[in-house]
Length: 157
Image (cartoon, rainbow, N blue to C red):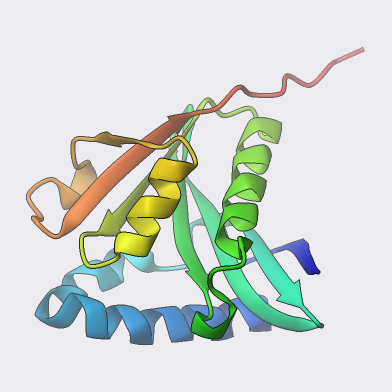
């Protein structure tokens, strides 16, 4: 059984998973990898979800503010030996739930063409391709997505 835990970007398990993610992306992205590093810093992360299986961290995902009504999904990763069990989908769903709880209307994200599993995950979960945004506008390896979210309005009563 997979357990999801909410935490922050300084959590030791998150930092370890991000290190593994960066090592994998360095191989997948090749020479383009150095371009992405400045856009994957952790200082603007506002929310982290960690997935645990048998008390071991096996996956992660994070959110950072993109605009006044949107959050950006960042640092999605599941360890290779834990892939194929729906963990990434659970993490993504939890990030979307948190987006709604925080009152945002949309999730956006960028992934690479060399990550077909990620592209498939996002499409399967209702994400639609959009024109590349921000720093990814002229990057041929990048693919950007969005998903509309129905925010949960907090009652003031």
